[in-house]
Amino acid sequence: MKNQVQLITYVDRLGGGDLDALRTLLGGELKGLFGGVHLLPFFHPIDGADAGFDPIDHTLVDPRLGDWSAIRRLSADVDVMADVIVNHMSSDSPQFQDWRARGDASPYAGLFLTYDAVFPQGAREADLMAIYRPRPGLPFAPVTLGDGSKRLLWTTFTPQQIDIAVHHPQGRAYLDGILQTLADSGIRMVRLDAVGYAIKKAGASSFMMPETFAFIGDFAARARALGIEVLVEIHAYYQRQIEIARQVDWVYDFALPPLVLHALHAGDGAPLARWIGLRPSNALTVLDTHDGIGIIDIGADAADREGSPGLVAPEQLDALVERIHDASGGQSRLATGAAASNLDLYQVNCTFYDALGRDDGAYLAARAIQFFLPGVPQVYYVGLLAGENDMDLLTRSGVGRDINRHHYTPGEITQALQRPVVRALCDLIRLRNTHPAFGGRFELLPTAAGRLSMRWCLDVTALRLDVDLRQRVHTVVEETVEAEHAR
Image (cartoon, rainbow, N blue to C red; front, side, top):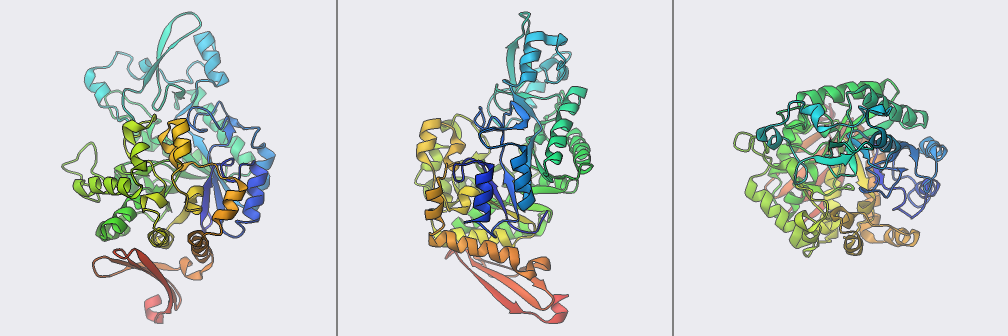
């Protein structure tokens, strides 16, 4: 993976076009900004129950966006990352429809995870209560087969997203076929979506268990054999992120967004500085993605709150959530929790720009912190344009995360790129991509309360970032260091 800033985007929501239009945009108005692009699900269809994360056919590009030849053209210009949706597929998929019609006579019998495959002797109340849930309720949905019999299926997220039996030969063949298709189309990086839920075990949490780690390791090895790097997407207690990072190519630094918000809202950089000393370096740094702002990532371990405290105290975490709601004028409250149709229990839905009260100085300080940390930065397309909450889309869809999934027209992109905050962000991106110091050695510098400083050194050249967290401003200074210090 190139040590340059990456873009995260939906193909059709940045300019309203297809893959070739996105390629033109990256080579035109966005030229020189990104060393890679993470394409959020572009599979058939992009507008299912979960914005493409419930594919009917994971090996077919949605024809409205193009085809695999368009992916190959784009990957010839810029590194491309794609999602492998490991945990589930759409209930409208031909495989599921065939199994529902024919049952055990279907060639896809065994592909979908049933309740009794995990609980052959049935489950006790304690077994069901042990299951870790990202949303309210139990992860099961009933289905009636063609012969009139009924089965209970695992559906971790929605009834339209049917969990895959990943260890069954059918499940393994299904996932390997996706990897091969991506490799054949020039994709060299994949993100494993929802992989933390892929393994189920009676009496256990069925989330990030030792068996899950083993599955991730095996799947990553199969991907690497095809020349593909693997990014694991997990929202979890911060110590688990550290553990995961030791076993995979890349992890997300999901603790960073809430810690940066806490630092800038409370004028307190201590929790962020502590995390900088702990965090894995093989991380993709993000402030925003297509999902909400994670909260679980800096809180106490849900399974052991007393013995495993978070990066911030519970009262600080509660205060942060309220500050986001206040900064957004209450808009994030309308998109989060019981107000939203997809009840994410661990996220606040809001654009990062609105989470900081549309304060340009604070927003640029946050991006500077992101870009200066070790790892590879990713910038979400809404964040690139300092986007505001899309309340119209939220009202129309009722889906909380749509508040941060605006559909930009070409004219809106051109207009946004002229805003001073966006021009300054683009300058920061170019600095991060081109300054040689970022190929050197990183250090967190000692500072007074309410301030944060860090530096990159290569030979005798250094680039230092100073952030006044209380004034919510930053400065970047190039300096010369003594040769002995540089080593």
